[in-house]
Amino acid sequence: MSSLVFPQPARGLGLSRRACLGAALGIASMGVLARPARDAAPVVLATEAPVEMDPHGWLVSEKLDGARAWWDGSRLRFRSGLFIAAPAWFTAALPSQALDGELWAGRGTFETLSGIVRRSHPVDADWRRVRFMVFELPGAGGTFANRVARIERLARQQPAGAVWQAVEHTEVSSRAALQARLDAVVRAGGEGLMLRRADAPVETGRSGSLLKLKPLQDAEAVVIGYVGGQGRHAGRLGALKVRMSDGREFLLGTGLRDEHRDRPPPIGTVVTFTYQGTTAQGIPRFASFMRVRTV
Picture 1 (cartoon, rainbow, N blue to C red):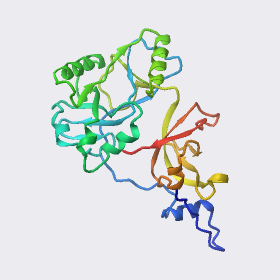
Picture 2 (picture 1 turned 135 degrees about the vertical axis):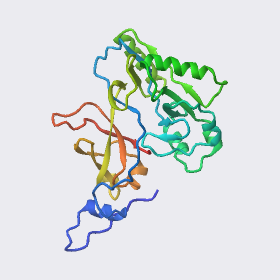
Picture 3 (picture 1 turned 45 degrees about the vertical axis):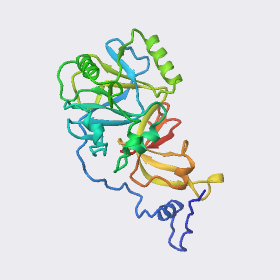
Picture 4 (picture 1 turned 90 degrees about the horizontal axis):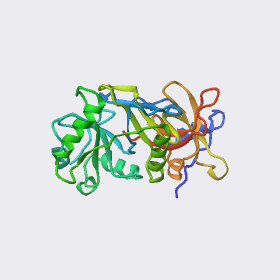
């Protein structure tokens, strides 16, 4: 295993250990790097479900830990707006109807799935493992319950083993039943649940009509700096300095794997972390690195 070597500060220049780490990574500035502008896909984004969620009036599905994707009827795109280099046979099997969903390869396969769908030259054998799990019809009218029924009708018209499938949505009768469903999904290796108001219209952006329910909360932050490690991590990354979209900054060190400590995510990278509530100052409690957002 290679180690991240910190160059020694030049005498009289007053360079900090963090600045030396930046130099070691070839980074000229600790500021957030600008990213090319692109048109984001017009999709609805979830918020955290409140404690003691009453599921009456909501439809519940499993939260799939895959890659959010949007099919506009001719091209497949990530949530960020970047086009996905899917094989021609995969996209040819998708309908002319716009679809919103998740590229998925099964529970516990996020890293593998991410590697498959991010390649600029798709590998057919790998894409045979991928399914487009659809949960919304962008631009369609009616309530969410109406749209779910339409998705299911479209899915039934396909042959067995089709490249896209309808995400199963069910009603849950009580808070106790919702907790039992969450527990069962997590025990089976799933990430959590999604809840959508049955009467919700098509929406875009962050919405209170779409909720995610997980044993742990998660959020995203941008890498803005580094702190060198100590003890067994001396000479490597100790923690990432990150900033959330609302300006909150904190250090994120728990959960980092050796690959991240040896080759830290570049400044400007968006990372996902889990946490359990916040401190009185609004800082995420027990924050733990989960993964680098790849799209």
